Length: 253
Image (cartoon, rainbow, N blue to C red; front, side, top):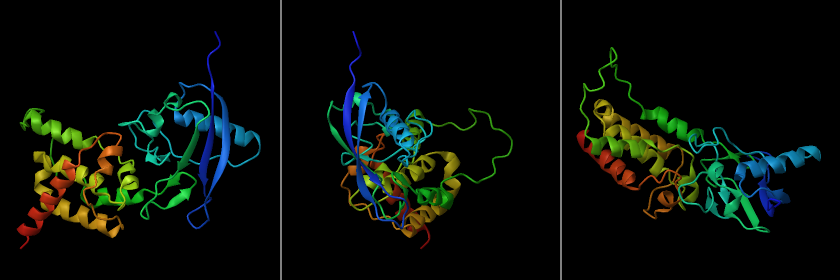
């Protein structure tokens, strides 16, 4: 029995650069295997475009295993598509129906300027991390694994926060283009662990101020960030960040 294939119609945002005027272009992808990933489908479309002498669709990808956070764009109005807890590279064509029209566009946020087509500049996230999302205290020789006791409940919470892959879906989905979920997760994972406590006050101040300097909006607790996060990071991290920031500001008075 021949394997069933499918055809989809694409409306893809094309933009040659941040200073250029963008527009939607229409394409048809035929004879697709329903089990291929969304990015593999775009690979097929790009092969056809290159064969026809046209400019392929620019998009980011790396691991294609839902780990790196490189992939990311809006599919039919939803960041990473309609599947909950899924990155674009983990989204498969079987999630769509034969003959569907799929609208694809980049993250929409002033702090994520378009580089080309579906590729945006997310260096703002790197600058937030550089402001304090690390432990710089000298640790000396390699410590024994059990020299610092950490309860499982605490380590589990820290791990859940550290699962953030920095893809930017939270910013794209938030009507305020807030980066509070990303920043909150990075602050929380270190605030919970003893290794992060010596720089606790300085870290939250620097990272929050950098987030503001980058032009991200304020959080108004709408919850879209949590809903679209491929790692299902909880908005509890935002509340933790705000408590940490208030604590740091009071300690300076």
